[in-house]
Image 1: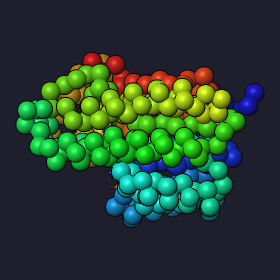
Image 2: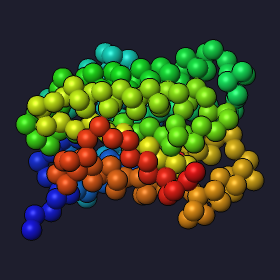
Image 3: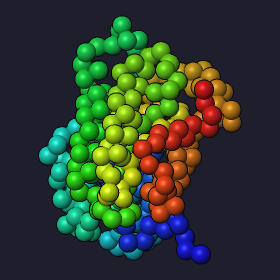
Length: 255
Ligand code: NAP
C-alpha cells in the first residue's frame, strides 16, 4: 500500500516557519519528502537554522529560506516567484505567520493601532496569501492551501477581540475560497489550534494564568507544536483530499 502521507515531489511554502507552530510544520512536511520554503519576517538566523536541519537530513537543496511580510502584496508575490524559480510549481501553501496582543485588552480598551496591526497581519495577510495561492498553486491534484487560525474564534474569551475577529475573517474567507476553486482539485482549509506552548502564547501571561489555561484542556496540559503539525501534514497529503472548506480545531478538546 502506498504511503498516503508521502509528500515526495511536492513543493511547500510555509510562512512563519522561523519559530513556533510554523517551524514544526515545515519540519514535518520536509520529513515527508516535500521541498520547502522556510519563510520568516525578521528572524533570518532561526529560519536558516531550520533550513540547515532539513538540508542535512534530507539532502542539500530541499529547503530554502525567504523573507516575507505577509501583509505586503509585493512580498507575497515575490515569495511565490522565488519558490517557482527554485523548485518549480508550488503544491502546498501554509500560512502560519500571525500576531496577537500580549496585553489582552477588552474591546473597549483596544487601541486602534493594535486592531490595525493585528488585522493587517492576520486578516490582510490571509487574504494576500489566499489570493496569490489561488492563482499559483498547482492545479489537477495535490494542491493545498492551509491557514492557521485559532480556537479563540470559538471560545470567544474576553481579551481576544481583535485577534479572534481577525482569525474569524480568515476562516470565513477560506471556506469561500475552497468553493471558488471548484475544478482545480485544490483544497483550502484552516487548522485552528488551541493554546500552544510558543512565544506567542507565553507573551504577557503570568505563571498562574498559564497553569489555569493548561488545566482547562481535558489533557490538562498546553498544546505542543508537535500536536498541530501532524494535522496539517495529513491535510496537505493525498490522504487529506476529501477534507475541503473546513476549519479543523486542533485543541485537545479545550472549551
Ligand atoms: P510565534 O511563535 O510568535 O511565531 C510567529 C511567526 O510568524 C514567526 O515565524 C514570525 O516571523 C512570523 N511573522 C510574524 N509577523 C509576520 C509578518 N508580518 N509576516 C510574515 N511572518 C510574520 O507564533 P505561533 O504560536 O507559532 O503561531 C503561529 C500561528 O498559530 C499564528 O497564526 C497564531 O495566530 C496561531 N495560533 C497560535 C496559538 C498559540 O497558542 N501559540 C494558538 C492558536 C493559533 P519572525 O520569527 O521572523 O518574527
